[in-house]
Image: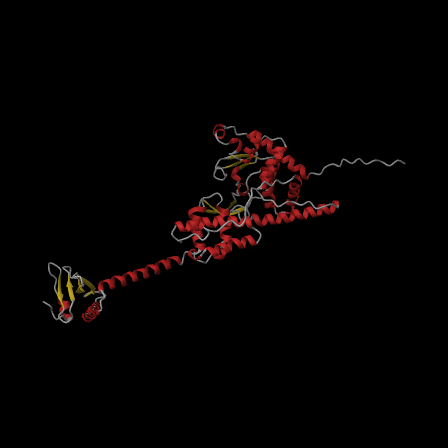
Length: 443
Protein backbone atom coordinates (compact mmCIF):
# COMPACT_ATOMS: atom_id res chain seq x y z
CA UNK A 1 0.00 0.00 0.00
CA UNK A 2 1.21 3.51 -0.76
CA UNK A 3 2.22 5.64 2.23
CA UNK A 4 2.05 9.37 2.68
CA UNK A 5 5.81 9.82 2.98
CA UNK A 6 7.29 12.40 5.31
CA UNK A 7 10.88 13.29 6.14
CA UNK A 8 10.69 11.65 9.62
CA UNK A 9 9.11 8.55 8.08
CA UNK A 10 11.96 8.27 5.56
CA UNK A 11 14.54 8.73 8.28
CA UNK A 12 13.00 6.09 10.53
CA UNK A 13 12.36 3.46 7.85
CA UNK A 14 13.89 0.27 9.24
CA UNK A 15 15.82 -2.45 7.44
CA UNK A 16 14.47 -5.90 6.72
CA UNK A 17 15.99 -9.21 5.76
CA UNK A 18 15.44 -8.38 2.10
CA UNK A 19 15.20 -5.27 0.00
CA UNK A 20 11.77 -3.55 -0.06
CA UNK A 21 10.07 -0.48 -1.55
CA UNK A 22 7.48 1.96 -0.20
CA UNK A 23 5.29 3.86 -2.69
CA UNK A 24 4.52 7.54 -2.09
CA UNK A 25 0.77 8.21 -2.11
CA UNK A 26 1.24 11.86 -3.09
CA UNK A 27 3.51 11.30 -6.08
CA UNK A 28 2.57 8.39 -8.37
CA UNK A 29 5.54 6.27 -9.37
CA UNK A 30 7.87 7.52 -6.61
CA UNK A 31 9.38 4.78 -4.43
CA UNK A 32 11.55 4.77 -1.32
CA UNK A 33 13.91 1.80 -1.65
CA UNK A 34 15.45 0.35 1.53
CA UNK A 35 18.30 -2.15 1.31
CA UNK A 36 19.17 -4.79 3.97
CA UNK A 37 22.38 -2.84 4.53
CA UNK A 38 20.38 0.22 5.56
CA UNK A 39 21.12 2.15 2.37
CA UNK A 40 18.12 4.14 1.11
CA UNK A 41 17.39 5.54 -2.32
CA UNK A 42 14.67 7.10 -4.42
CA UNK A 43 13.31 5.44 -7.56
CA UNK A 44 10.63 6.20 -10.12
CA UNK A 45 8.72 3.30 -11.66
CA UNK A 46 6.76 3.49 -14.90
CA UNK A 47 5.53 1.29 -17.73
CA UNK A 48 6.52 1.70 -21.37
CA UNK A 49 4.04 1.48 -24.23
CA UNK A 50 5.16 -2.08 -24.95
CA UNK A 51 4.28 -3.13 -21.41
CA UNK A 52 7.90 -3.23 -20.16
CA UNK A 53 8.22 -2.04 -16.59
CA UNK A 54 11.14 0.30 -15.92
CA UNK A 55 12.77 1.47 -12.72
CA UNK A 56 14.60 4.80 -12.83
CA UNK A 57 16.95 5.50 -9.91
CA UNK A 58 16.70 9.17 -8.89
CA UNK A 59 19.36 9.32 -6.16
CA UNK A 60 20.14 8.63 -2.54
CA UNK A 61 17.52 9.09 0.19
CA UNK A 62 20.04 9.17 3.05
CA UNK A 63 23.67 10.05 3.54
CA UNK A 64 25.96 12.48 1.68
CA UNK A 65 24.37 14.02 -1.42
CA UNK A 66 20.92 12.61 -0.59
CA UNK A 67 17.80 14.08 -2.18
CA UNK A 68 15.18 15.46 0.20
CA UNK A 69 11.64 14.14 -0.05
CA UNK A 70 10.55 17.25 -1.93
CA UNK A 71 13.48 17.01 -4.35
CA UNK A 72 12.62 13.36 -4.99
CA UNK A 73 8.95 14.27 -5.66
CA UNK A 74 10.03 17.03 -8.05
CA UNK A 75 12.34 14.63 -9.92
CA UNK A 76 9.59 12.02 -10.15
CA UNK A 77 7.15 14.67 -11.37
CA UNK A 78 9.63 15.73 -14.10
CA UNK A 79 9.90 12.11 -15.19
CA UNK A 80 6.10 11.76 -15.34
CA UNK A 81 5.81 14.90 -17.49
CA UNK A 82 8.49 13.62 -19.86
CA UNK A 83 6.67 10.29 -20.07
CA UNK A 84 3.39 12.05 -20.85
CA UNK A 85 4.96 13.78 -23.85
CA UNK A 86 6.26 10.52 -25.30
CA UNK A 87 9.77 10.71 -23.82
CA UNK A 88 11.50 7.96 -21.91
CA UNK A 89 13.12 9.06 -18.61
CA UNK A 90 15.52 6.09 -18.48
CA UNK A 91 16.70 6.63 -22.05
CA UNK A 92 17.14 10.33 -21.38
CA UNK A 93 19.19 9.61 -18.25
CA UNK A 94 21.46 7.27 -20.21
CA UNK A 95 21.88 9.89 -22.92
CA UNK A 96 22.71 12.57 -20.37
CA UNK A 97 25.15 10.24 -18.61
CA UNK A 98 26.81 9.36 -21.96
CA UNK A 99 27.14 13.03 -22.86
CA UNK A 100 28.59 13.84 -19.47
CA UNK A 101 31.07 10.96 -19.66
CA UNK A 102 32.17 12.13 -23.11
CA UNK A 103 32.64 15.64 -21.75
CA UNK A 104 34.72 14.42 -18.83
CA UNK A 105 36.81 12.19 -21.10
CA UNK A 106 37.42 15.09 -23.49
CA UNK A 107 38.45 17.35 -20.62
CA UNK A 108 40.81 14.70 -19.23
CA UNK A 109 42.31 14.11 -22.68
CA UNK A 110 42.75 17.85 -23.16
CA UNK A 111 44.46 18.11 -19.77
CA UNK A 112 46.85 15.30 -20.68
CA UNK A 113 47.59 16.78 -24.10
CA UNK A 114 48.53 20.17 -22.63
CA UNK A 115 51.88 18.59 -21.78
CA UNK A 116 52.29 16.99 -25.20
CA UNK A 117 54.28 19.86 -26.67
CA UNK A 118 56.81 19.13 -29.39
CA UNK A 119 59.72 19.91 -27.03
CA UNK A 120 58.49 17.59 -24.26
CA UNK A 121 57.50 14.79 -26.63
CA UNK A 122 60.90 15.04 -28.33
CA UNK A 123 62.52 14.41 -24.94
CA UNK A 124 60.42 11.27 -24.55
CA UNK A 125 61.34 10.20 -28.10
CA UNK A 126 65.05 10.68 -27.38
CA UNK A 127 64.85 8.54 -24.24
CA UNK A 128 62.79 5.83 -25.95
CA UNK A 129 64.59 5.60 -29.29
CA UNK A 130 67.40 8.02 -30.06
CA UNK A 131 69.75 7.90 -27.07
CA UNK A 132 70.69 4.27 -27.79
CA UNK A 133 71.63 5.04 -31.41
CA UNK A 134 75.21 5.70 -32.50
CA UNK A 135 73.96 8.67 -34.49
CA UNK A 136 71.86 9.80 -31.53
CA UNK A 137 73.74 13.02 -30.64
CA UNK A 138 73.65 14.32 -34.22
CA UNK A 139 70.00 13.32 -34.68
CA UNK A 140 69.03 15.06 -31.44
CA UNK A 141 70.91 18.20 -32.49
CA UNK A 142 69.16 18.26 -35.87
CA UNK A 143 65.63 17.67 -34.57
CA UNK A 144 65.97 20.06 -31.64
CA UNK A 145 67.25 22.83 -33.91
CA UNK A 146 64.92 22.40 -36.88
CA UNK A 147 61.76 21.82 -34.80
CA UNK A 148 62.49 24.65 -32.35
CA UNK A 149 59.78 26.92 -33.92
CA UNK A 150 57.25 24.26 -32.87
CA UNK A 151 58.70 23.68 -29.40
CA UNK A 152 55.68 25.01 -27.49
CA UNK A 153 53.04 23.72 -29.88
CA UNK A 154 51.26 20.45 -29.22
CA UNK A 155 52.19 17.55 -31.46
CA UNK A 156 48.54 17.02 -32.41
CA UNK A 157 48.41 20.66 -33.56
CA UNK A 158 51.01 20.09 -36.30
CA UNK A 159 49.37 19.41 -39.67
CA UNK A 160 50.49 18.68 -43.23
CA UNK A 161 50.62 22.40 -44.08
CA UNK A 162 53.11 22.96 -41.24
CA UNK A 163 55.21 20.04 -42.50
CA UNK A 164 55.38 21.39 -46.04
CA UNK A 165 56.25 24.90 -44.84
CA UNK A 166 59.09 23.53 -42.70
CA UNK A 167 60.63 21.53 -45.55
CA UNK A 168 60.25 24.35 -48.07
CA UNK A 169 61.82 26.89 -45.69
CA UNK A 170 64.94 24.72 -45.34
CA UNK A 171 65.09 24.25 -49.12
CA UNK A 172 64.73 28.01 -49.69
CA UNK A 173 67.72 28.75 -47.48
CA UNK A 174 69.82 26.80 -49.94
CA UNK A 175 69.89 23.38 -48.27
CA UNK A 176 67.67 21.02 -50.31
CA UNK A 177 69.57 17.86 -49.30
CA UNK A 178 69.36 18.87 -45.65
CA UNK A 179 65.63 19.47 -46.17
CA UNK A 180 65.33 15.85 -47.30
CA UNK A 181 67.16 14.69 -44.15
CA UNK A 182 64.91 16.76 -41.88
CA UNK A 183 61.83 15.43 -43.67
CA UNK A 184 62.95 11.81 -43.19
CA UNK A 185 63.92 12.17 -39.53
CA UNK A 186 60.85 14.22 -38.60
CA UNK A 187 58.57 11.79 -40.42
CA UNK A 188 60.01 9.00 -38.27
CA UNK A 189 59.47 11.06 -35.11
CA UNK A 190 55.81 11.73 -35.90
CA UNK A 191 55.39 8.06 -36.84
CA UNK A 192 56.52 7.25 -33.30
CA UNK A 193 53.91 9.74 -32.02
CA UNK A 194 51.24 7.80 -33.93
CA UNK A 195 52.45 4.54 -32.37
CA UNK A 196 52.20 6.14 -28.91
CA UNK A 197 48.62 7.30 -29.62
CA UNK A 198 49.64 10.95 -29.27
CA UNK A 199 48.33 11.83 -32.74
CA UNK A 200 46.01 10.21 -35.27
CA UNK A 201 47.88 10.94 -38.51
CA UNK A 202 51.52 11.62 -39.43
CA UNK A 203 51.68 15.16 -40.94
CA UNK A 204 54.78 14.19 -42.96
CA UNK A 205 53.29 11.01 -44.42
CA UNK A 206 52.24 12.49 -47.77
CA UNK A 207 55.12 14.95 -48.18
CA UNK A 208 57.78 14.43 -50.85
CA UNK A 209 61.57 15.00 -51.00
CA UNK A 210 62.38 18.46 -52.34
CA UNK A 211 65.30 17.29 -54.47
CA UNK A 212 66.60 14.15 -56.12
CA UNK A 213 69.84 13.12 -54.45
CA UNK A 214 72.71 11.54 -56.31
CA UNK A 215 75.46 9.44 -54.78
CA UNK A 216 78.48 11.54 -53.92
CA UNK A 217 81.83 10.57 -55.38
CA UNK A 218 83.84 13.74 -54.73
CA UNK A 219 87.55 13.25 -54.17
CA UNK A 220 89.79 16.17 -53.24
CA UNK A 221 92.69 16.64 -55.60
CA UNK A 222 96.20 16.96 -54.19
CA UNK A 223 96.04 20.71 -54.78
CA UNK A 224 92.72 20.97 -52.93
CA UNK A 225 93.96 18.81 -50.06
CA UNK A 226 97.10 20.97 -49.84
CA UNK A 227 94.95 24.09 -49.46
CA UNK A 228 92.92 22.38 -46.74
CA UNK A 229 96.10 21.50 -44.83
CA UNK A 230 97.45 25.05 -45.13
CA UNK A 231 94.13 26.60 -44.10
CA UNK A 232 94.04 24.45 -40.95
CA UNK A 233 96.89 26.59 -39.58
CA UNK A 234 94.31 29.36 -39.16
CA UNK A 235 91.89 27.20 -37.15
CA UNK A 236 91.70 26.77 -33.38
CA UNK A 237 93.83 23.95 -31.97
CA UNK A 238 90.93 21.55 -31.51
CA UNK A 239 89.57 21.88 -35.06
CA UNK A 240 93.07 21.80 -36.47
CA UNK A 241 93.71 18.52 -34.66
CA UNK A 242 90.34 17.03 -35.61
CA UNK A 243 90.70 17.68 -39.32
CA UNK A 244 94.30 16.56 -39.47
CA UNK A 245 93.42 13.31 -37.70
CA UNK A 246 90.53 12.82 -40.12
CA UNK A 247 92.89 13.30 -43.07
CA UNK A 248 95.66 11.09 -41.68
CA UNK A 249 93.52 8.19 -40.40
CA UNK A 250 90.57 8.21 -42.82
CA UNK A 251 88.15 7.31 -40.04
CA UNK A 252 84.60 8.60 -39.68
CA UNK A 253 83.91 12.03 -38.23
CA UNK A 254 82.05 10.93 -35.09
CA UNK A 255 84.59 8.18 -34.42
CA UNK A 256 87.47 10.66 -34.42
CA UNK A 257 85.52 13.37 -32.59
CA UNK A 258 84.47 10.94 -29.85
CA UNK A 259 87.96 9.52 -29.27
CA UNK A 260 88.84 8.97 -25.60
CA UNK A 261 92.32 8.69 -24.16
CA UNK A 262 91.83 5.08 -23.04
CA UNK A 263 91.43 4.06 -26.69
CA UNK A 264 94.88 5.22 -27.76
CA UNK A 265 98.31 3.82 -26.94
CA UNK A 266 100.79 6.45 -28.07
CA UNK A 267 103.81 4.33 -27.16
CA UNK A 268 102.61 1.59 -29.52
CA UNK A 269 101.12 4.08 -32.01
CA UNK A 270 97.74 2.35 -31.93
CA UNK A 271 94.14 3.48 -31.67
CA UNK A 272 91.67 0.77 -30.67
CA UNK A 273 88.16 1.82 -31.68
CA UNK A 274 85.69 -0.29 -29.63
CA UNK A 275 82.82 -2.06 -31.35
CA UNK A 276 80.32 0.09 -29.46
CA UNK A 277 81.59 3.19 -31.26
CA UNK A 278 82.24 1.68 -34.68
CA UNK A 279 79.53 2.04 -37.32
CA UNK A 280 79.64 -1.67 -38.21
CA UNK A 281 79.78 -2.79 -34.55
CA UNK A 282 83.21 -4.35 -35.00
CA UNK A 283 86.33 -3.45 -33.05
CA UNK A 284 88.80 -1.65 -35.29
CA UNK A 285 92.55 -1.25 -34.72
CA UNK A 286 94.08 1.80 -36.44
CA UNK A 287 97.88 2.03 -36.56
CA UNK A 288 98.72 5.70 -36.03
CA UNK A 289 101.35 7.23 -38.34
CA UNK A 290 104.01 9.35 -36.60
CA UNK A 291 102.29 12.59 -37.64
CA UNK A 292 99.06 11.50 -35.92
CA UNK A 293 100.93 10.45 -32.78
CA UNK A 294 102.64 13.87 -32.71
CA UNK A 295 99.26 15.62 -32.94
CA UNK A 296 97.88 13.60 -30.03
CA UNK A 297 100.98 14.13 -27.87
CA UNK A 298 100.73 17.89 -28.36
CA UNK A 299 97.06 18.13 -27.40
CA UNK A 300 96.30 19.76 -24.04
CA UNK A 301 94.48 17.69 -21.46
CA UNK A 302 91.19 19.39 -20.55
CA UNK A 303 90.40 19.06 -16.84
CA UNK A 304 87.06 18.68 -15.11
CA UNK A 305 85.75 18.45 -11.56
CA UNK A 306 84.79 14.90 -10.53
CA UNK A 307 83.90 13.01 -7.38
CA UNK A 308 86.38 10.20 -6.67
CA UNK A 309 85.59 7.96 -3.68
CA UNK A 310 83.37 10.68 -2.29
CA UNK A 311 86.04 13.37 -2.66
CA UNK A 312 85.77 16.25 -5.13
CA UNK A 313 88.87 16.34 -7.34
CA UNK A 314 90.13 17.92 -10.55
CA UNK A 315 90.84 15.18 -13.10
CA UNK A 316 91.65 14.90 -16.79
CA UNK A 317 88.67 14.65 -19.12
CA UNK A 318 88.35 11.24 -20.81
CA UNK A 319 87.76 12.95 -24.18
CA UNK A 320 90.64 13.77 -26.51
CA UNK A 321 88.84 16.53 -28.41
CA UNK A 322 86.63 18.58 -26.10
CA UNK A 323 86.06 22.09 -24.81
CA UNK A 324 83.72 21.31 -21.92
CA UNK A 325 85.55 18.19 -20.80
CA UNK A 326 82.20 16.45 -20.37
CA UNK A 327 81.22 15.94 -24.00
CA UNK A 328 83.17 15.46 -27.22
CA UNK A 329 83.66 18.28 -29.69
CA UNK A 330 80.55 19.46 -31.56
CA UNK A 331 79.51 22.32 -33.81
CA UNK A 332 80.87 20.77 -37.00
CA UNK A 333 78.84 22.87 -39.45
CA UNK A 334 80.01 26.18 -38.02
CA UNK A 335 83.65 25.06 -37.92
CA UNK A 336 83.43 23.75 -41.51
CA UNK A 337 82.18 27.19 -42.58
CA UNK A 338 85.21 28.84 -40.96
CA UNK A 339 87.53 26.33 -42.63
CA UNK A 340 86.03 26.98 -46.08
CA UNK A 341 86.59 30.71 -45.62
CA UNK A 342 90.18 30.06 -44.54
CA UNK A 343 90.74 27.86 -47.63
CA UNK A 344 89.45 30.61 -49.91
CA UNK A 345 91.71 33.15 -48.23
CA UNK A 346 94.81 30.94 -48.61
CA UNK A 347 93.95 30.35 -52.28
CA UNK A 348 93.62 34.10 -52.90
CA UNK A 349 96.94 34.90 -51.23
CA UNK A 350 98.75 32.19 -53.21
CA UNK A 351 97.24 33.43 -56.48
CA UNK A 352 98.29 36.99 -55.71
CA UNK A 353 101.81 35.89 -54.77
CA UNK A 354 102.35 34.04 -58.03
CA UNK A 355 100.22 36.47 -60.04
CA UNK A 356 98.03 33.63 -61.30
CA UNK A 357 94.47 32.35 -61.15
CA UNK A 358 92.87 31.45 -57.83
CA UNK A 359 92.60 27.69 -57.26
CA UNK A 360 88.94 26.91 -56.75
CA UNK A 361 88.11 24.17 -54.22
CA UNK A 362 84.88 22.42 -55.17
CA UNK A 363 82.25 22.14 -52.41
CA UNK A 364 83.18 19.21 -50.20
CA UNK A 365 82.11 17.41 -47.05
CA UNK A 366 84.02 15.91 -44.18
CA UNK A 367 83.12 12.41 -45.35
CA UNK A 368 84.88 13.14 -48.67
CA UNK A 369 88.18 12.91 -46.78
CA UNK A 370 87.69 9.13 -46.42
CA UNK A 371 87.11 8.79 -50.16
CA UNK A 372 90.11 11.04 -50.83
CA UNK A 373 92.37 8.83 -48.73
CA UNK A 374 91.08 5.65 -50.40
CA UNK A 375 91.73 7.13 -53.83
CA UNK A 376 95.15 8.38 -52.75
CA UNK A 377 96.15 4.98 -51.39
CA UNK A 378 95.20 3.39 -54.72
CA UNK A 379 97.57 5.81 -56.49
CA UNK A 380 100.28 4.93 -53.99
CA UNK A 381 99.93 1.23 -54.82
CA UNK A 382 98.05 0.08 -51.71
CA UNK A 383 95.95 -3.03 -52.32
CA UNK A 384 92.17 -2.54 -52.24
CA UNK A 385 91.80 -5.15 -49.50
CA UNK A 386 94.20 -3.23 -47.26
CA UNK A 387 92.42 0.07 -47.92
CA UNK A 388 89.11 -1.54 -46.96
CA UNK A 389 90.66 -2.78 -43.73
CA UNK A 390 91.96 0.72 -42.99
CA UNK A 391 88.47 2.16 -43.56
CA UNK A 392 86.86 -0.66 -41.54
CA UNK A 393 84.61 -1.70 -44.42
CA UNK A 394 82.88 -5.08 -44.17
CA UNK A 395 81.51 -5.07 -47.71
CA UNK A 396 83.48 -5.27 -50.96
CA UNK A 397 86.45 -7.62 -50.76
CA UNK A 398 85.44 -8.96 -47.35
CA UNK A 399 81.72 -9.46 -48.00
CA UNK A 400 79.95 -12.78 -47.59
CA UNK A 401 81.88 -15.96 -46.87
CA UNK A 402 85.25 -14.21 -47.13
CA UNK A 403 84.33 -12.00 -44.20
CA UNK A 404 83.36 -15.05 -42.16
CA UNK A 405 86.60 -16.97 -42.60
CA UNK A 406 89.14 -14.19 -43.16
CA UNK A 407 90.58 -13.43 -39.73
CA UNK A 408 93.98 -11.91 -40.61
CA UNK A 409 94.20 -8.54 -38.81
CA UNK A 410 96.25 -6.84 -41.58
CA UNK A 411 97.90 -4.73 -38.85
CA UNK A 412 101.30 -4.51 -40.55
CA UNK A 413 99.72 -3.84 -43.95
CA UNK A 414 97.48 -1.12 -42.49
CA UNK A 415 100.45 0.54 -40.78
CA UNK A 416 102.43 0.57 -44.00
CA UNK A 417 99.49 2.03 -45.94
CA UNK A 418 98.77 4.75 -43.40
CA UNK A 419 102.44 5.71 -43.20
CA UNK A 420 102.59 5.95 -47.00
CA UNK A 421 99.51 8.16 -46.97
CA UNK A 422 100.84 10.37 -44.15
CA UNK A 423 104.11 10.87 -46.05
CA UNK A 424 102.16 11.83 -49.16
CA UNK A 425 100.04 14.34 -47.22
CA UNK A 426 103.17 15.86 -45.67
CA UNK A 427 104.77 16.19 -49.10
CA UNK A 428 101.89 18.36 -50.31
CA UNK A 429 102.82 21.23 -48.00
CA UNK A 430 106.60 20.74 -47.77
CA UNK A 431 108.87 23.26 -49.43
CA UNK A 432 110.26 21.84 -52.64
CA UNK A 433 113.78 22.64 -53.75
CA UNK A 434 113.85 24.64 -56.94
CA UNK A 435 115.14 22.83 -60.02
CA UNK A 436 116.29 26.09 -61.59
CA UNK A 437 120.08 26.29 -61.89
CA UNK A 438 121.44 29.81 -61.67
CA UNK A 439 124.24 30.46 -64.20
CA UNK A 440 127.03 32.91 -63.54
CA UNK A 441 127.29 35.64 -66.10
CA UNK A 442 130.54 35.66 -68.09
CA UNK A 443 132.77 38.65 -67.61
